[in-house]
Image (cartoon, rainbow, N blue to C red; front, side, top):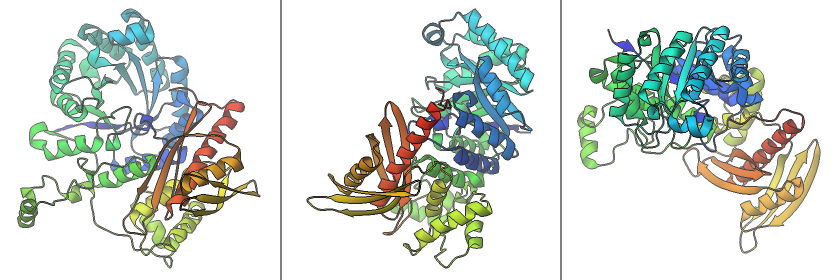
Length: 512
């Protein structure tokens, strides 16, 4: 009988650490519900000690999302573990995941500890975590650059202390597949109690080998793989969930294992994560890229017409790919809208539906067809949960040799109007907004992309701004890209103002 490989999704924790990625609590809950629909085994929902928002996200996911084990991350510190315990206290299937660096460079440069001291920290942390829940995972950070003898010692000791899963992270994407194989084999042969736990791997993609390393670990006996949707993650990202799952499914002859993932939910999940995080999936990305099942060359097209297996090793239907187009218009009702949102993975209350429906009508008035991607952009804004200190009421711009913008904003029921010139209509709008709000920002990055097809497509603007050392990402969408750009800029301003207010009142974010 084929082994079942557990899929541990860390999109909401490690994936959100991608530079520029930022999710509200509501957006994290939305993605977590979709991950449950995908039927992953474990959702690593966040790092509760890192910020009040992360603690709240883990708490809400633990309460509201049914099915998967819900996991929180903690360093080997009692406060971290207490935060995880607090966030997960009402969860029917909780897990605490604790970690500490074990490689020579981590011991000497990051921790300033001896191997014996780190081993004691790990054992103490696992015991504390076991007092709060029965399911505890331990990770020797940077395991693939750790001395094998010490790695074996700390793995054995943490299993004795109560760890039920031991994760072997390739934290910096340094390993090769054959090194991963030999490491897992060494642990299985030299750690006497290794059969009392599940062996897991967590691979980064710095050298482009995260998926290959993860598959090598499975072949060597690992029972859990940690990965993210679309390969999101720090630096070059993590091992891609969709690539691992479909490799195991497509090459069952080679691996003789199965997963519990509902692969037909892959495309829907990928697009939701891409939309809410604001990261575009590259067209040639395996499994979920726009070109993954496209054929342009004449020889390929002829072969596919004769038999799809000539050039396709997977069926598009197996990953949930369809060509359906939403043709709702301004005469469409709430019931049709809610049905399509449900199909896309969004559950909305009656109150939320009223707001989303109004946004939908605004788009439908300007477009002949409203596509799924348009709805996803609408939902991203509706679930952002950023208090609108400043709201855009009206915007008038002119281009030419002297671009100008007139902006009307509202704050607490009072309206303000100003105008400015700039290097273009977007720059002019930003200068007018700066003058009205009195908030001086540095624009670090700016991008606009089309979220759907056609000349009347919705444009989504993303900006990164900095003020007093604090960075914020702003996102907004509109059929008018200048309006989308102004709204995104205001969204970033509002995020910064919320953070500054929390810092003053003692609710500032902790470092990660």
